[in-house]
Length: 236
Ligand SMILES: [Zn+2]
Image 1 (cartoon, helix red, strand yellow):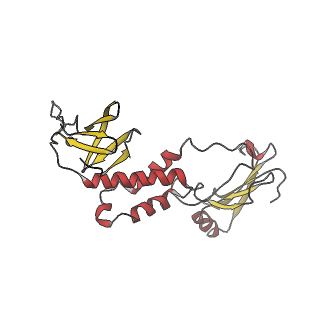
Image 2: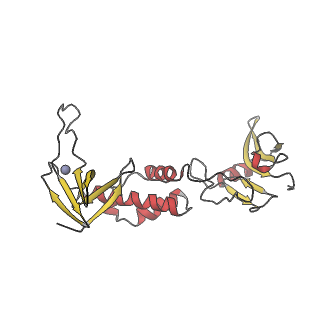
Image 3: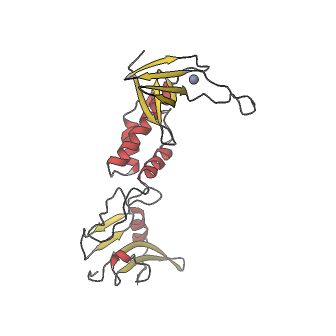
């Protein structure tokens, strides 16, 4: 019997019980007792093994104590537990903060010793975990007063910050997007083209909103480097 256990979320979002280096999925609940079976309950040793190996490790939880029963055919894995804890921390920070994914990943990876960090999922996967947690949970703003942009939200798919300027929430709004590497690219080219269009401007920027782009001309073509969104009332 032990009180040393924790819960983690499975990839499906259900609770897993972690105790003594083993992980259990919930089997059933009978009044005040819950019954858990090892996550290796239905695993195969090798791909071509036809009969699955069923781990007989079980856990019974009453109030806040856990009793481990049965024999596991595999050894306990504490690395996995640590890795899961790191994932849980990433999920928590993704929900509770507006930090950039890479900052969250660095904060979590930095808090785990180097020895154990090798057991943690690749940082790219952790970044995706952050994005998955946030996806669909941010309500689309309906007015420019509701539109709040932060550096953490405005990143390119490559992870580069792209919010250069924001005049702030309000009816007359100017927002400029450009990454540092875009600006460097622009600085290296002496011919610039400035273009303005109404067509692709998001509706939230009012019917008379405009999108301006500053493009660098090179090799007989132009490369957009800076994007400026403006409401009709704002002036460049
Ligand atoms: Zn087991």
